[in-house]
Length: 599
Ligand code: FES
Ligand code: MG
Image (cartoon, helix red, strand yellow):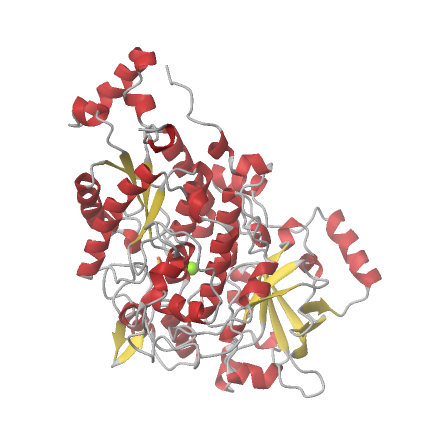
């Protein structure tokens, strides 16, 4: 066997089969033998595969991974590997207070230590609920050992009185119905609960379906696997295939750095536009890219993604849900359409050892109501806009959720197309908003622009999904279903609100949003990609000095050690909201070999 066809030495052999360090080898072997593995297995050159388990009783969205992991193990074993399952810090989007946004970087840190510091040759990333997918991919990028994602899959479709009820999306709708007095509290709860009929993650095109679709588009998940609903038998089979494939990937030494290239990130941006993906995607993709060491600036979302048409008819933008998406062909059908229009880098490598072009070129749409052919899209130019102005350096807007009513009211002035002016109404956090929104003295009308601040990575902390704010009940009663919303927080991917959000820098980081006052006139110009407060510079300067004298924008004190640590280290959303440090800090484990012995 020539030098370059010799199989690469397995990382785990440094622990279990190192003749140069027999006393440490004995120590490592002794405790792993203890749970039933034999010397033959541990020293026989079999790849040791971690299963990074995100399912638990605290994480209902990902809980089915506890079952799927059994099939992953069988796949690993059949392919000649050894499976070692271990827990990841739980992240559950709707259960965690003050926000699951706090935990993405914490789960990331923990997983880096686990896969870097233990005898693992490859890892299966069990993805699902919103932040679990980026947290796990960020860690895989930092350590850069062979890694493959397994989506837990969406819940089955929700139904109420013969209509599809989608995760999250039904909450926003039911809130309006409750505010208008159309339903009572008990009906509200029943309606919302109808959207969650089975195990799995949100069945809408929320952040979970988005991020799992993008993990597939990035090439980090077996083709066709992101959209399989959690309870389907195909999901079990996919778990088994994923287990088999990761063992092969270790033998091939196919690493995240071979897959997560700039072209792959651009493919994911294009797919995000075509699926009508979440406004959380730019934050998470940027975070993964920075840990991989690939340059994907926020502006790429507009430059690469804006002109891409919307093809997928899923809530909140459209009508359908996860089961329909899978039956219509899922990610490969979408990518197949985009490939035919030359919008995808076909040569990008994927975890199955083939390119995305090879995987998806022949994929067909099985139901054109759910996935549209590119010749008949749901909407043209459906990507994000990247905005700036004198209130912030960067923010994004998802154009595919701008509905006809909103467009007619705000963006159809023939003398000033795609621009409007309004009066700012400023809320400091969601509590302030909930207390005051229905207060008649606030005097809101259709010219009001709602601002949310104090909701960013530092201010909240962790950045909360609170920018989509419903109008007061008396405006809803007049048929005004949406007011323009702008804020330094995020919003749920399940929300169809055309907000301007992810504002960076946030008020708590010294952003000019902290200087805004209720009553200020604000101009939004989508053509110019600008949002500006129409207050002169000397007055803004005076407000800045006043704020500085008061010690800066006030936010609640940290309640846990991690909240404090995150606030000290976290960056802003336009650069991924990751823990900042030098560039080598983001990717340190990629470059430092194997850690030293522990005794
Ligand atoms: Fe977990 Fe939506 S809340 S996937
Ligand atoms: Mg959410």
